[in-house]
Length: 220
View 1 (cartoon, rainbow, N blue to C red):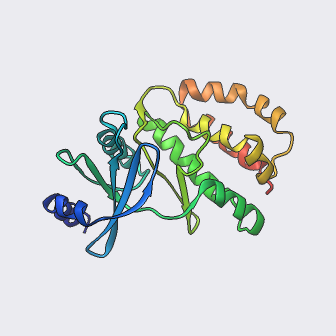
View 2: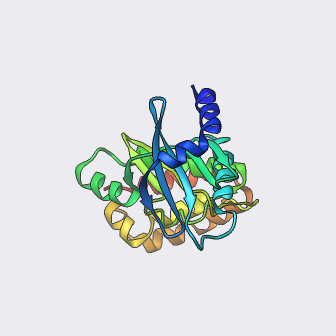
């Protein structure tokens, strides 16, 4: 179905764009949606004044993320219309999910562990996804599954920073409070050497140490 879906989108891209319904507008781009076969497809387009090649970049970096099993599925980039078709993802924003789940359950740690694994996969691929220290709406969670979205600001780098950024996120005052992490300042200091080692080497063993340490601190 995936190959057939991509082929249909490529053949009918202009028509699909003209019939799509606006879903959301951000500061630099907008997302519209349309049914194709039995699936909802998202269409990303740039707003006036957006950086050059923003949509093309999102297509490129989303495909790179897909190579390691991360992100919404890239379907087609139409260079003539400068629009990017990808799978449509719904769910709670990361902020809202953390707030709700820490109050009502179930345990947040399996999903947080999965996000850590996705960050590690991106680090292994050499794809740096900025802003994971402040994910807000950049991670969506539904049915205990998380998806990292919006890859237009990425870059390829040998630095292993995605795990570091997500660790920083969880130890920020607001998140740490919701997650029941006490003494976060001392805990952050205790991780410095491990994080420096991981950033330099990207070793799986160091990543596991960081992940398990942070998840053990979470009681909320």
